[in-house]
Amino acid sequence: MTNSISLNSVGRTFKGTVALDNVSFTVPENTICGLLGRNGAGKTTIMSLVAGHDRPDSGTARIGDSNPFNDQKTLEKLCFIRDNQRYPDNYRLKHVLRVAPEFFPNWDHQLAADIIRDFRIPAKQDIAKFSRGQLSAVAILIGLACRAPITLFDEPYLGLDATARHLFYDYLIRDFSEHPRTILMSTHLIDEMESLLEQVIIVDQGRILVDSDVDTIKGSATTVSGLTADLDAFLVGRHVISRRSIGGLSTALIHESVSAPIRAEHPLIHFESPSLQDVVAAYGEADTSLAFAATNTSGESR
Image (tube, rainbow, N blue to C red):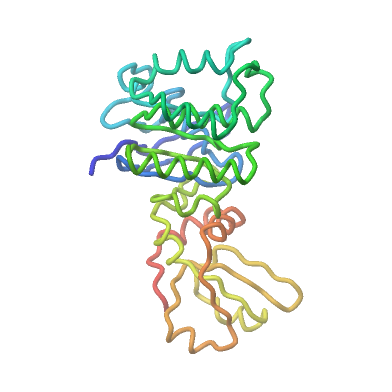
C-alpha cells in the first residue's frame, strides 16, 4: 500500500512560537485517519501543510511523491474543508453547485442532491446568512460530493445537532466504502467517530504523541483505580500518562496492557479498558515529555 500523505521531520514556527516540532507520520492511501488533540495542538497547521496552503520551515510535506505547495497538479487531487470556510458575498447554494464541479472532476451531482435534501440546506438564502450548522452542511456537501482522492476535514460538523452529525457519519462511511479515498479529519467528538477511524494521530504542543490504529492505542493502555496508597504502590516503575485523586481515591491511565496474572496479584486495584476518548483526554492532561516517552515503550505487563 502506498502512502497518500507523509510528513518527515517537519518543523513550523510562527513569530517565535513553535507550532510543529519534528513531526513525522504517514497516512496510507484509502484510509480514514483521525487527527486528534486539544485546541492549539497543531492540527490545523498540519492540515495547511498537507493542503499546500503553507510550507514547513524544516522537513518535508508530501502528497505521494510531490510537494503540494503551489503544485497545481497535486492540488487538483485534494479538497481541504476548513472549519471557517468562506464564500464570496451573495453566494447561494446554486453558485456552489455550479463552481465546485469545475475544481473537482470526480464531483457526484446525485450525491450532492441527496446531501442537500437530507441536511435541508436552504437554496434561496445567501450563504453569508447561514447558521453555523448550515455552513457545516455546505462544507460536508463539498467534502463528500467532490470525491477528491485526498480529502481533509477540519472539524466539519460544528453547529450540527446529534442527528445531523450521525447523518454525516452515515454518508461518510457509505460513500467511502463505495469510493475509497484518503480522508484526514480533525475532531473533538472522539466517542462518536471512533468506529469510523482506521488510524489515529494524537498531537499535543506541536508533537506527535501517538500514531497507530484504534485497537492498538486502546489495547496498550489501562485505567487503574483504588485507594491512593494502594495505587501508589502499584504505579511504582510504571509509565503513568495521567492521574487524578479525590480524597483518598486515585485513578490513573498507564501505558501498559495489564495481563490477567498481574491483575490477580493486585486485588485492591480496579482495572478497566479505556475508550479512545479516555486515552486522548489523558494525553491532553499529561506532561508532553512524559507522555511522549510513554508511547515509545513496549507497553508490556510487568
